[in-house]
Length: 346
Ligand code: SAH
Image (cartoon, rainbow, N blue to C red):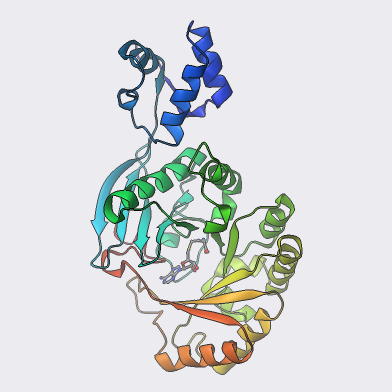
């Protein structure tokens, strides 16, 4: 008879220690296994080389390790790696390693698919199938950390929650994963190197502020004109810009952490002066920085990157008002690993 074995990673360190004691072994064995599971990222009990064969077999008889598996891997000409990772139930999400000269960033998914409906995003075309659990989020980071060490000779430096899904619609699990990523028993990364990107859910932004989170916040703004934003991100009809603005003011008052606005400039949508003026005005409400993201086409032509003149007029207006603006060039475009392209082909 096949018994459903429990995922050993659902056990806390205390529970693991207790388990070993119940087996007549030393509690300390629990610490060793915990380290294998979390900071070393073991995929099997066989990997746990400082345990006796008998202990490894005993663990194998009692538990499974539901680690994600890299199912496909594409490498871009610019060094970006896109991983298609298979979850224990066969579903697939994507996570990306983005190398630059000074850092390596992991772009991770928080949900399988997405329930939001941004017209310009490939992931929005998949319906949301389920939330990722904390381990599945953690594993993506660990996998990319290992790839960074192998391919670039150094650990991962930054994490962005800009893969598939809306992280604030899976906040509890994202938060648990971040706790593990930042804890000494996990990867010991500084929360300042982690950015959670949201399409802008005011209630959740306030909750983050109340929870005193230490990671950075990015908001996908794309337009500071209500009508335009409602058109390109229809779900925002339920979340007026005034509410978003108030939530961000609340966030800043509590955290003193500057907000990043992500912004794509599209031909005929937000490449006019009124859009520029509206953004400048919006930027004055809360200390912020603007990332102008290059548009990554998702194959239908309704959305097109605006010309350079439009970008320059945004830059000039923002700089004139002392607002930091950075132009982010796309990476991994040739393998559909750039922002908004995840799930394009799979
Ligand atoms: N749901 C979250 C995180 C995932 S999207 C959010 O909305 O922020 C990550 C970023 O990619 C967002 O800023 C999103 O607006 C942007 N994006 C989506 N589709 C894009 C595309 N085709 N080209 C460029 N950026 C895109």
